Image 1: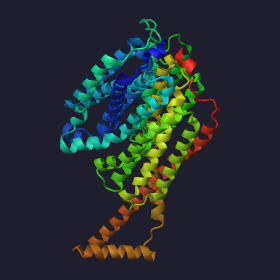
Image 2: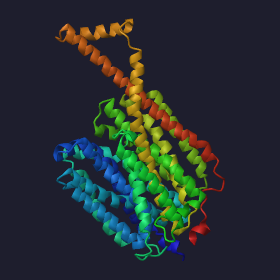
Image 3: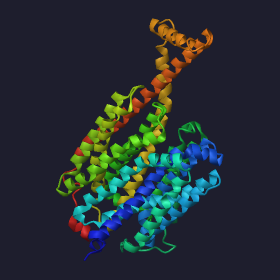
Length: 525
């Protein structure tokens, strides 16, 4: 029996390992979004500014993106089971410490540590699930894993809202503790460690590679998280970290391609399936996290919803994706080409974005979103599993961990780029649309005069003086202009996301016919 075959499990053992891995992946992803709804409560409790609270999210994201590329190497150094169990323990203990933090910077520190543990959970869980299933069922394995990855970001806001409404903000961290303890012991009992690779002595460890990686991805994540808040390149810190990210990336690539024992095996990107899959995963992350970010933002800023209501709106979409994933897994097992499924997914996601662009108005209601988001769920369902199997299917067993690390990092960076671009665009484009709308408003125009007069009389009927009523009428028109400008900006964003996905379709269809097929003989040796 080969090493790859020895890792395959059957029956209840496979089920236990799969559930454990998915729970850990869910914990990590939920924690990237659950904090968003608790910021106001944290601000009052910890006496922090909103800018300081932003670091609660940024610290976690930076730690995540630093640790993800290193997970394959760390698994080899300590054994996958031990590393996975240690990551769960770090994540669980730091969750307890986050809930007990007495100050904002204490919380930021514990969130960074939590991110170091959490980043490993996501990628290692994917590797464990992939290796637990036989080669011919890897599509189904990725479908099962995908359910956690797709549903996770959606569950964060409603869960966070529930705990905030009924308990207090520390409970968004405490919920991780019982699940983490159970996952820790299940991992020690059932997860196996492969014997791929070998441990390195202290002299052989790629310390420079680690430093360059931290400088590159840490600085890049900081720029993406803080760019809009700090006015991008008008701010010295953004310029400094942008230069650091570029130099760090250059030195990191040079080091990994020349050092005998690299911490990240960049040579695995010679596999065309993985290199194509990494790009497609970046686009998937852009669309997944970008749309998960923009829809709650729109419903809260324009429609006045609570964070809980906004989060609940996305659940039908996630359920649709979850129901589709096993079906897609079976289609892949029956030999349906990944490229046609991916092209279909990109096309459907474009149609969803175009529909959203045409649907949005200041009076758009909840009933208008249901079928729109169902279409979003269909598109994501067609994308996640085929892209992941395309990326990992032709890798050798010892390369799967490296491949999963790359796709995990690209999905995270795609999401970060998407959110950064969306926030920047909305902020800048709001002013453009406002100026354009104001240029069409003139008190000389009859319809504008009629509107001001009607509003003035409405306020006078409520007891306001003429001058006060007219002032309120002008404020109402100004608010209406601002709202319309914001809606137009959101419409632009949806159309932009859709066009990115549409552009990918012809490139996906150009993938060679044999790409993505599972090479059973290669996977077995």
